[in-house]
Image (tube, rainbow, N blue to C red; front, side, top):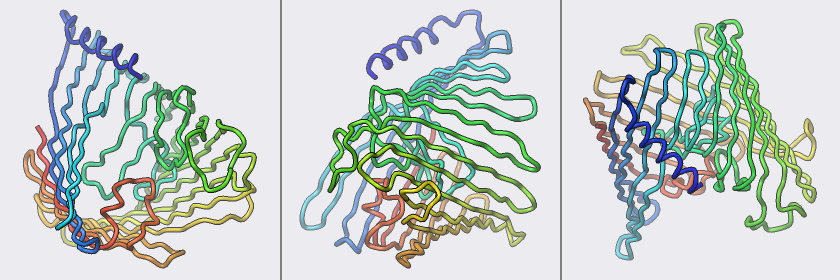
Length: 382
């Protein structure tokens, strides 16, 4: 994607330079975060780190009905893994975080570049986590983007249509364990329409899974490129309490394996009780299984998630999240105290989890969240 990056940067510079006669807004902002996590259960293994994400955004309005805007940001971070009385492993990286251009009208938009694409109704256990990896335990909600083009059209009745094409994304994303082929275009779309007091949506995506550099304990296919189709259905309604569901069906054309169908289901609700400053309760139930038949019995896992959120004051908020693994009878606990000031936030987080993670296996950060530990984070936004 180096060619695209050069084209983007040239376009971004031209957008900044040739602005005479146009309404323009240029904003430079950033986020600085430092953290420390320690895990007594792993011989007091600890990590300290520092992250800075600078962001430059430009917006130009043309004749009040059309606008161009752009965002350029980088994720720069360094960390050190500390093994007491043994060693310290350090590392760091600077990489593009967002890098996109967008053209917008009152009912249409097209955005091209490195961007975040996410949708769906679920919060903690998301079957429609196809292109992002947002961890609900992460206060900053950080996630890598994908390279592609996204178009959206909005109808007067609040219906909308999404169409996208992705290319140049060699790493796994979402729930994927097999990456896509970097040079093959992925494509799909989404239709969302209002229904009663909420909305319902259908989503589809096609890609070529690349098995060439993936090592398996036994052969799963005689082909390097495996076609994959995903189908999703989700909805959300407000009937006094919030109700939602997400369902995903995935078919992979693996010719040497039996389990070629994957199925995800999420059911959830939330309600804010009139207790003190308002206690918000959110609950989700999630099932994932694989099968050799589209609608036959399969093998998989099931989880529940329960979240309690309570504002103690204007500045202080506390959140508790509990996951339960119904198959292994394991419980995952997470508690977050947040102090919010003008431009600063302080987080004190504790976790008590099984030693072996069965949930969020696609997130590399889980190494430090196994067992019991403490996580401190300070954030400054400018």
